[in-house]
Length: 301
Image 1 (cartoon, rainbow, N blue to C red):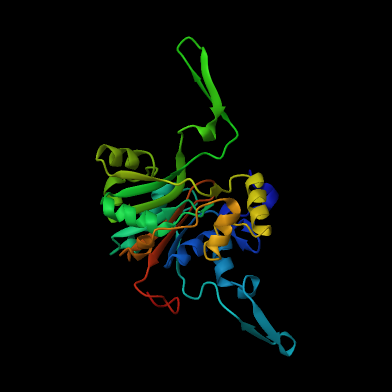
Image 2 (cartoon, helix red, strand yellow; image 1 turned 135 degrees about the horizontal axis):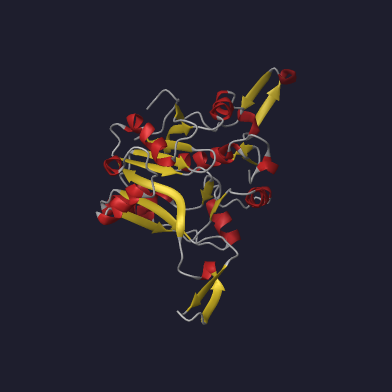
């Protein structure tokens, strides 16, 4: 309802940024780092997401040569030819935990997978996060970010006397950024009907099995039409920091970020899976696996 201006009856993951929906931008982010095997956990308006990929138009985001009056089109490059996408119906009214449980069968044999809310984008260097998670040996990890809000935080004593007022972004408060990493043991901490970040995460905390990765770079979610306008503005100006598949050094310089990344972070042994999860009015979960070598067609795994 908060995104009605973007189009009636459109599931949030399909709200466009430029010529492609936010879901595509997120999948492109994961694919850039080698994770190209996706499971979409579909609910509300699953048909819209299926039709987008079944009728995928490569010319919308790729250079091409048109000849013979349009009868022949030669693409200069392709977007998703190496993606493998499983479309799983997980129910219209299921919560996030239920959606993740519903695709458990598709994660057999996967030691590690990633998960995401599918309504947010980031410039975070994913291999660094994965390497840290692997080294820690814990079961679950989520990315925490500073809230992008205009609120002010108030500190006061028992008598009501105010000692400090400052923008919430200047405090130590962090919120769940919607990017997760899990080992397959996560399912041992889940029960039917439970929301993912409530009871299961409480059990993980008690077992000392939950980590968070603090990211202070770009992270934004699409919750309102104003958020969509912000994404559109960054994209239109060529300053979309989540487009890590483009010239990341130039983008980082424009927005004042450190473009240097640890060389060792790109050499981790991660070869398991990745899941991407979305929560909100339109529930969606994706699961992505990194293959040991690049895929040449959706049929290869």
